View 1 (cartoon, protein in one colour):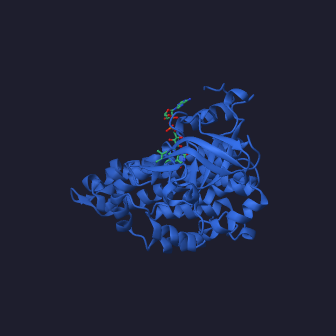
View 2: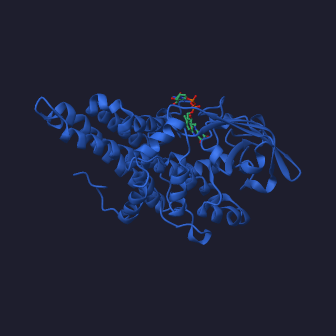
View 3: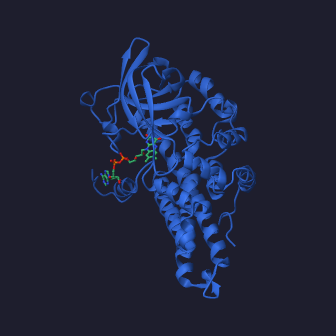
Length: 389
Ligand SMILES: Cc1cc2nc3c(=O)[nH]c(=O)nc-3n(C[C@H](O)[C@H](O)[C@H](O)COP(=O)(O)OP(=O)(O)OC[C@H]3O[C@@H](n4cnc5c(N)ncnc54)[C@H](O)[C@@H]3O)c2cc1C
């Protein structure tokens, strides 16, 4: 039978507790939200109250102070139990920018409240319609005026903005043609969306193929107090990059969880479903895609663990985090595909939850970074090939 992990698991207890929590949110709960494109408020509250979303916040700021591998185990288990962490996963990692680069006052003001859930910081405003993956060409501009910044521009795909109190915003503060490097002149801000909404900030939901609470956001002379600048003006792109390895490893862990859910569901069904007088799982045509997806999932899981090991040792796991994200997203897709095929017609019935998970897991080959850009990273930074773009 499929074990939780191949390597000895230091977070078995956490997994068990998260599993218990998730059992209170069965398929019907997610199906209803999916139909309504609703937000899983009760689920997010339960995870917050359990202390899971504050896992990475140090104890001195009221969090659990757990290592990245524990956060990965939490999110993986959420997905493996058929739930969807996309509604709140960013609460775990966006705060890392404040933790690493914020002032003492910012850390004391925000982190304890993020840990208790009193404040939700789960909106991350980076992508823009015209810049796409080419982040440094973003156009949203924050102009300093006395003790505040005036922000104008637009973001797209800002997930959970309607369900977040704060947003971490990346905006240009020096025009690109006045910087020596295109990565300079971008800054990060903490935006209090409760105050800004209706005062220069407009949020419009985007309906997508899965329930992801994504939005587009418009800034029209939105004011942000200068004290909400994170770190040094002009260095924001660096700060965002600093957080990306953790984000990629956590998203990869979610994909591993999805793959485990698909594989359990498919193998249970393949053992039970009898056609032509024998279980369909006896046919190699059914077995092999599942066995292949399982092998892909385990390989990706080891890469997630290698990335977490390096991160926890204070090193930079750029290579591992990128490869883990790509391999895990491909493994969950392979497992989802095999799961649908194993179920035949029933794979398409909403009440089996497979088609929902299939739609949900597809995202991770595109966001938060698409597979092509990961391959470009590996080609350039690991294999030493010339930059292609
Ligand atoms: C549901 C959803 C939620 C999201 N949530 C957030 C969020 O909360 N915050 C946020 O800031 N962003 C968010 N995103 C944005 C996401 O990070 C981007 O969609 C993703 O990075 C790809 O950017 P793009 O859509 O602009 O595609 P583009 O940059 O337009 O790229 C389109 C395609 O071209 C390929 N491509 C582009 N350039 C190259 C190249 N040089 N070489 C090879 N291939 C290339 C890409 O890989 C991609 O396949 C979300 C997106 C979605 C769909």
